[in-house]
Each structure stands twice: as C-alpha cells, then as structure tokens.
Image (tube, rainbow, N blue to C red; front, side, top):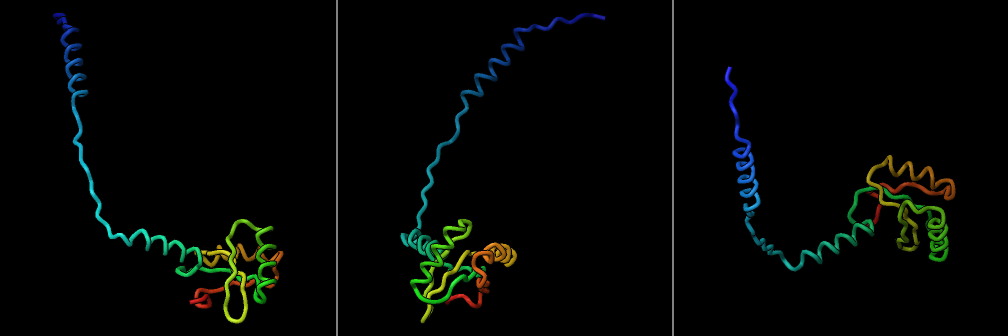
Length: 134
C-alpha cells in the first residue's frame, strides 16, 4: 500500500478563495413605494375609537348600574377602585345613564368576570350583543 501525501496548502488556498468570494457577494438594493389613499389613516383611527366605545364588536359586556349621572359617576369610580382588569364606561340611553364594564369576545370570559364583579355589584348582569346600543 502506498502512502499518498496531500498538500495542505492546496486545501488552505481553496478555503481562502471561497472565503474571499463569499465576502465579495453583494445583495441587490431596492426601493418600495406604497401608494395609499390619504383617508386610510383617518379611517383606521375612527375604527380604533369605535372599538374602544364598543360600537363595532358583537362581544359581551356587563352592566353594573342604571340611573342618574351622579350615581353612575359614583358607581364607575367604585368599580375602578376595585377592578383594573376590564375597562368601564358610562353610556347614556334616554333617560338613564348606564355603567358598562368590559368588552368580552366570548360568553365564558364575560361570565367569569361577572362572577368576580358580583361580589361588589350584586345587581350586575350581562348584556348580549342584540341588547347593546346601535
């Protein structure tokens, strides 16, 4: 059996060439221009506001108070002092003010919150999507 001697400089020079070539490869540069209607940002902002006011969702909410504005303000303050998990708002439906809590996407999520809220607001009840303001 014959011993074959390999030249280590050949392998090393091949590695050096490949390394040099890999550094000299450059990527293509491109510019993308997006043309959109100027009203799109305004519409997105309007949609965001409507979602915060529960005007677009078919989800569930909880009503904790119905009556005068003075008592509605008191009820919402009492709620906010005890609960931070769900947003609350005062809604006006002639002739009463209502305090609504949460914007729940599922009934089970709303029912879990209602169990907690009942501890301090025993008259709280769920509002189904068809009962909500139009």
